[in-house]
Image (cartoon, rainbow, N blue to C red):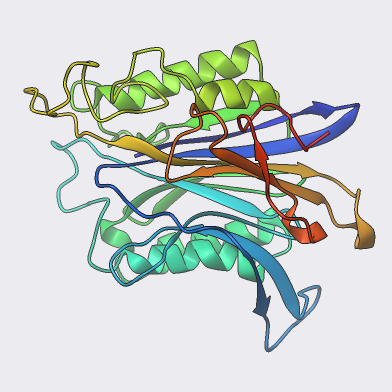
Length: 310
């Protein structure tokens, strides 16, 4: 379960967009160091380039290395979150299936095949409506570029999409455009985290506000905070409390900041801030990186503090 979102704001008078994800898992997972890769389009058509440079943030899952977030040199990015449904309404619909790996393939194609968010959204919508196992799939996905953000929810082949070009937006793990969403009494955390994320962004929606959000432990070092820990109280080290809440905890975080038309070729500037195998509240655990400018990642005190993005 994760917390995701975006915000449109200004840096020194320039319109920018930042997209973020807090990555939470139950089991300790190895997150891999991100690198710049190049996707080759063997049959380019129209405005599709022959190659696209991209960065996929990946983790080890069995023999696979699925991407949990990513961005390309055109500023097209994605972040996603599992969607949990009401146990009394879900029937045979489920968040995890034996074929779910193909969802990660679809995520990856967003940043390897498309130069605008709108094109990528059309592909994702078709996937959710027609994929062989779409009738048992529920998902939450956010796709953006330098000018637009599309927030997508899907349940059993039905897809609903919100487009935003200003303001801010956040999501946790319950659909808000479908009645099948997991209710509060089945999952406290998703509602508490979303409420906190929205309050923080309403107070401050720039890069510093996003950083505050990713480090927020309003409910203490527990599973209910945005920056999550595997416990219900700070004393529950053995995780044996009587609860239906699964003990997810934060193991990685990322912020993509896109500044339009400031590098060669009229491409946007892409700044990646990230923490892997740790959380954003740990000092000097994070990096700021301009991956498509031949820059090495730079250690920062904390991500979401504006270091290396001005």
